[in-house]
Image (cartoon, rainbow, N blue to C red; front, side, top):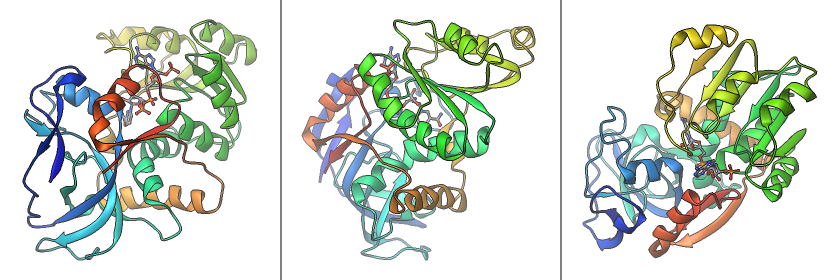
Length: 328
Ligand code: NDP
């Protein structure tokens, strides 16, 4: 089969399209014939080796890259009961989706309803379920809450803005250009700014009349976290869920106290999708919103599999305006 592999850790030039053996599904696994693979920032972190010491996402080159996909079940291994050959499925957080076939732990696979396209299935698993976790579990938003969402025109960002609005929160959004701020507004953000031109901490202070935000969803990391802390009410929550601009340095706990006894968390997606029931509940909730027209899965570009390098350059180059997919 064809597979995009990383021969070693490094920049996008380490990716190449290779011939690889079709994997054999083991106990409690299923073989997925992939139609789409999702491109995510975690693929960049994996490729660069930022997770080389991770105990959660074990990897060592050479490996087939990609942590998200959709397609149909080609074969099931021993012990698999909730899915069968021919089912339309989607999944995330199992390595090896930039390929024609992947052997995936069956508990990670959810069925995609007939009225939901497989493109949308792939698009919603990692970014969508993360946005669901952030808005429904990590800090369950409700009417009366104010949230600040960084990189709001990106893959997670656009879904998070929409879900936050569905929960009734007041949404302040940031993005790297005026055009992207407009995208965040089109997703429903009450207020959106270009944070390369405007000090977002001052904006939050001004438009909330000094009350500030209950929660900041910050996936940008190094470039924003200090000012994000300043945007929070006393005992507010900083959900630092990514590091697109670089890793955040160690923080002295007393800084959290001095910032108003804020709660800081750095979630891994693996912990927001711990078992089949949790993944399926999040995914089916999102699919239901899609089918009912309450949520839009914003697909930016679908690249052919051989253009995986360009797809990585696009996400790293801050050029995404929604989800990037590979068509297998
Ligand atoms: P995006 O499509 O949002 O792309 C990342 C965005 O980050 C860019 O478009 C850019 O938006 C912003 N950004 C700011 N500074 C930089 C920089 N120096 N280099 C590159 N991008 C920068 O990607 P995803 O939706 O896939 O992921 C968004 C974030 O969420 C990532 O940090 C990712 O790691 C994290 N994530 C975390 C999960 C979790 O559970 N912990 C799960 C899934 C994703 P702009 O130009 O508007 O600033």
